[in-house]
Length: 495
Image (cartoon, rainbow, N blue to C red; front, side, top):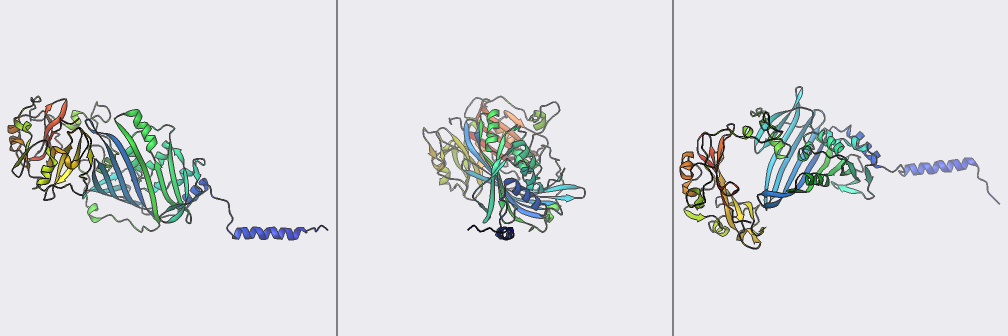
């Protein structure tokens, strides 16, 4: 016999099931658009955040005539940003690696609102600079996830959760319109805006850029944004030059915490910084230039960015002369002296080692140089002072640095105070020698750099106007007329 259920119990059972499902957390599964919309809404109520910005770039190209190498650039910045008052702090380093040498510059930057405008305090190499900022670029715009959410088909939600800062995250992957994405970054302020400097005035057209976004599962706040500009910039560079190639260019912003930054305080020494007296004569701040965002000076009637004689130099009272015939007089003896020990370039690296010179922590004595090539690097004298050198391989096979020769030397004393490597160049020229001594020993240079706004003058001596492999450069302090920089090289036997 069939049993007929009355509608009342059926409805009650259905309601009970729905209640149980609701209690168990049953809800619509998140989508990329809904997650990005949640992030945008949640960020609207955030008063501050702490994050890290990492830019990784590798370029392979010719660093000197006939010399190819891979150059790595790493920008690692911690970021703190507050909404009220509007302020941002960035602190970290810009590192460059090339031919086994790693160099790094520490940077601090504060951007705050003062009166009716914004100012930026930047510390590079213990020197503070204060500059006016035209617009409110304090970095809060980095979280413009609402603009990303506007393109619903741009992202896909990964099945597996990602982990950022030991927390589970939703992971979105996709591609985004290049010009639109860079507009978002360029409006993001002093942090992500640096990427715009690296890409320059590139016209991306309809290119798409891979983007990866991680969102904290519990808080629905941003955890990470990774933007891969490699392929897009590779295509651009390939169409401009065949002398360099881009191997990698990525921007990664990792968000660590929210509403934990109470106040951003400008250091007292930064507040005392005076306005930059040069008014950025080169058209760009030191920080911007380090991060690749600069343009070079223009002169009336010249094409944009042209480095004309009027922009970079002026007529000097020092006369110039044609390149001399290679001989054994003047600077062309290539004889240098270390504490009375005379050697002629090129000479074995082992001869420096015998005098107590070491490679330092950032040099690898086993780094290999290919046949007929040379590499720029450093060695340390027993007192710890750096000596810039050119490692030269004149053999028919690869050699480790320690087995190479020294084909060039550089030393300087820009401050004018006692310092620099105690090395004597041909005819007794050394740091502290007078300009008159240089001209008497070497004669008139082939070229002179004498820009009246600079505190120094450079004299260039070379034996062949089409080949600067054999040369001497002398830098002289304009006021004291004393030598503050020496550079000698004999590399014509490379290649």
